[in-house]
Image 1 (cartoon, each protein chain N blue to C red):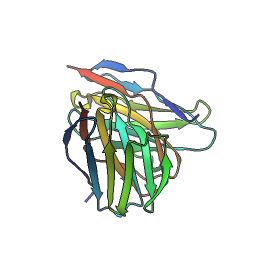
Image 2: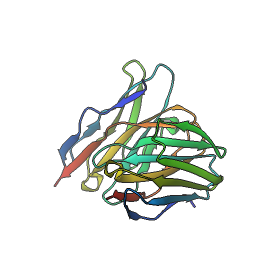
Image 3: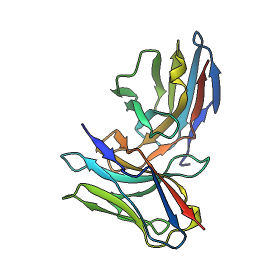
Length: 108
Length: 112
């Protein structure tokens, strides 16, 4: 079955510390991959997607096909980064599968 | 306009009631989705409409009935729901492979 795994439910870091949110996918093909973020009381929104290889709010994500991973990284965490982060896979044109999510808390 | 609009924001219904959730997008997207999200859980796909035709039904109970009147509108008709169906129901739309999926704010449903 197609699956997206985020092993950490909660990740707490201090402001200014590096952040890495882990994501692994299980799919034999070449899915499109995304990171979505949900800030408190806001809708789920796109943070970045692999296809555009962009960096948003200082976050980057690298696809490692050998390890089937798409980890999200930021060198210096900010308090406003505190949110729920979901990794998502698009194994088919109209199918998006979300991971279980990681809550990031950035401590002052 | 990159918004998906959902109504109502909150809905309380009895187990014998019939109600509907509504969703609208004006981004010209070809696909529209219903997801269910329970507290502290990821969104779970329920239905996908592509080109106004139901293309994916993730084995959702028949008490949930989707409808796509046109390319901009998506409804979810609710009938004889159970308390465990209480959740946040998210509507979304997308343009195709590699495209972003855009979510609405959701409709909070409570079944009493």
